[in-house]
Image 1 (cartoon, rainbow, N blue to C red):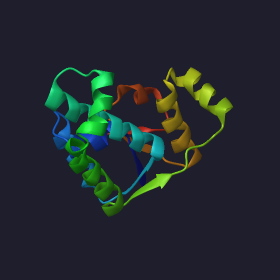
Image 2 (image 1 turned 180 degrees about the horizontal axis):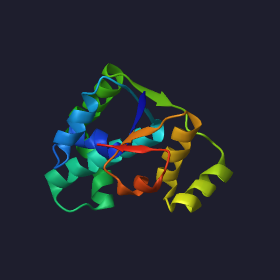
Image 3 (image 1 turned 90 degrees about the horizontal axis):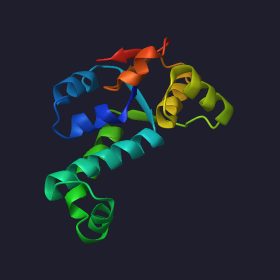
Length: 148
């Protein structure tokens, strides 16, 4: 069985949140995990934003972008841990489908934003029936069983 990993589970596994305990239980399962580069990009951005807010308070895009040049080292441990997680579990990084028509149909059918619809389309295309996510938007997708 393959379990698709959503960004919020990855972030909660790597950074302490109220969902960290649940994320750890999922990632300790002896299963195969998969994701896409789009989801990993989201995990990078969200994790870096959490770290930014810990250091600087309220999120401001201009100030966030400035830290990329002046204080990138505050993100390096998180990014290293993410890379380690992907390579050690291992997490299979699947190619995302490029069928725009199907993506739009899934957006409409399940009332999903584009990134979530892309996850659903990826799962459908690769025969994945389980998703590890804290996002309630996936509860209406009949063929996906939501974990935890």
